Length: 338
Image 1: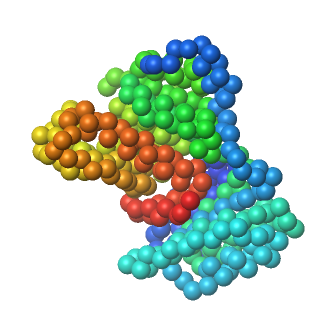
Image 2: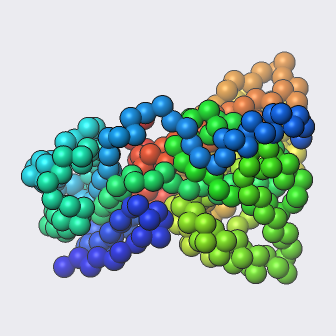
């Protein structure tokens, strides 16, 4: 009989349950204008989205060994509770015989309550030996940005968030250097510095984690944070730390990767967004993309192209995570359509 554990740590509006089954699957510096700064501050750390906020939408994600009838059982369950399915998408990994599904449903007409529906979902998934996560979407996820001295990714995230392209809140920026604090000030977001040395690394990480828990941070993005986070940090936020790196990794590891890529004559420059794990740059991939390079490109051209594709890839990955469109299994992901 599967055993269930409450896993409310990632989002207080999300109730997640994990079952252990025989399959062994597990669930889850250039703007100094004071006028500009004041305008940014008025935006605060809240999102601004053009959508119908009055329709309560929840999301169920399930996966497990493919068994006939799971999709029908979930549909009947939601209908029986008076809920209306807004969107459904599924996938079968035929090599591994694993079934994945994501359901978004309107519960404004639900004639029971949340606990009753959660119990029903748990019962169905127990019967089919499926892992699941149920999110009621009662508040946007809260994101912490970790950054060092490279500012292009940070600027892009904050500007796109202000434009309403990211459905999340950003209450905190953490850095190991004070250099980019002015950016946090412009947007009115708390900016904390935790200087890292080999001797103080673990102590500082514990302070970072404590602060993030106090602020109810749901997930973290490493926006060119030039520190290797510990295995313990990764475990604390499993599948909730998103990293971005350029395509010269892992082929050109170390200093000046674009210089060495230029010397090699690469013809593609790309970026990968993935969940951070104990294996450096080897975690489950969320999004990748490339742009062409040619013999005409200088090192600076490659760097410029790399930064642009990093920004696009990271935005796509963040949007997918915020919308609960990602299921991690093994060292791979299923990313459902936007």
